[in-house]
Image 1 (cartoon, helix red, strand yellow):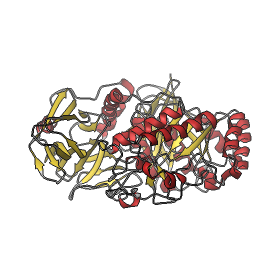
Image 2 (image 1 turned 135 degrees about the horizontal axis):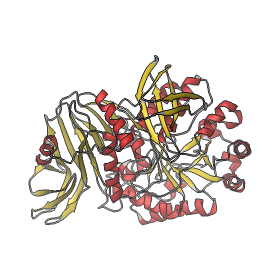
Image 3 (image 1 turned 180 degrees about the vertical axis):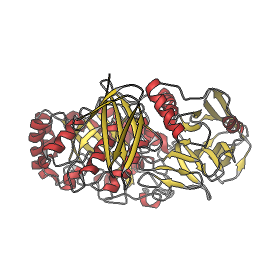
Image 4 (image 1 turned 30 degrees about the horizontal axis):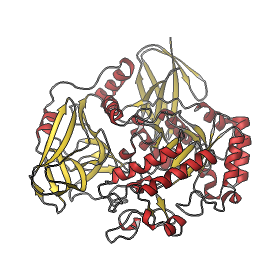
Length: 594
């Protein structure tokens, strides 16, 4: 462990490259493993050739149907690693859904995120294996770290099946029809090895950007009504905050109205009871006051009482009998007004509808920021689409492109979304489960955010969810929360009733502005982080343990060390910074070179 911490230190201060370009026996073994393919009925076939072409660390995969008959293809195992890693090998992996993340060991995977893809969302996995998605990082003892990942997500879902002694690299083909003599190109794959996973993730992100350039946008700062007022927010709540923010913290430019303004899920342009049935007036008042209106939308779903459901049944994803597919029959049914039904984004009429909704909200309502929620259902499993050649990923991406067409230059935040299928189609990505004023939530969502900090500024801007600085938690626990969110470098949205915040806590919020765009590089224990911004170098220390913790941090040269939150000068240190932190707290130190 000490060796790895020192490697992170070298990489941060000296830019030392930790990606191995030499021959690697484990990588070579994986590359030479035999691919296999199964048909819709589950039987293996050798009539389809799996062609793998390597260009350094990146592999292009093509399937060629060499038979004289059309075939429906279930999935392809591209590579496998048999007995190359022991069951105690630590790993980190992404989920398909934004709320799913995994770590632990190959023999004992653990859920990091809020909800399991298999247990909660009912996504299948083979007996004896744990299915994870998109990216897998392995940390074998006394060996290089390895990263496997899918560089693109145009049509297909890439995943990994894990067991104590086996890893399978898989693409779900969703029973696509491959005609006799035809071929299809799959998503590109990365296989990287090196001394440091932060460097590997940078290489990986750069390759993803080759296929899915991220949407360019400014990083927002603002205020969200949900965590202080929920669905009962009133026009007066908004008016009070416009006055307060303009006077005390005008850097919070975006004012986000959350779920509850609509009469039903799906009827986004109709007026519900919220705000006295005057949502558009409230949005106009936000704009007039010099702020940017932001709004919550769940564009891919509707409930059975909505006008969209009643008037446009042809717009909905179908089940195998031709009826609208109930979400609870194939996955989690939804958290409010469930079960939900799903708009079929492969239908040109639905695409026109989505474009119209967002064009109206942008051009007529003045919205410049959209929080898109429940996007996972836009890639719902088990459905029948208008376009019979569509996959879950391509259907979802068609809908997102229609949304972008209507939204213009607005900021698009993905939430509850299918992570990799959203590449290149969102400005920001929620990187954790919902926050709440509880220590366990601060700690758990903190781990989720830190595990995805590498994505910030590379794939999109990360949204670590709202900053909460009011409530019954201890000062130490609020400092842990503030320090961790500062380290992510992503969006800054206050979730407090700011008319009740203390002067001291308001000062902390101001210190987080403007968002500095850069994420800290953390050690494997996620308790020591380094951050270089355009203006300063920062050291972040986090102690989520239930007891005090001692830190000894090596320094590359002499620094004046300053507590960032209080501006207290701690002194000049040349070789090492030592600190003992109480339980459940965090610190941010500004390092000034001498």
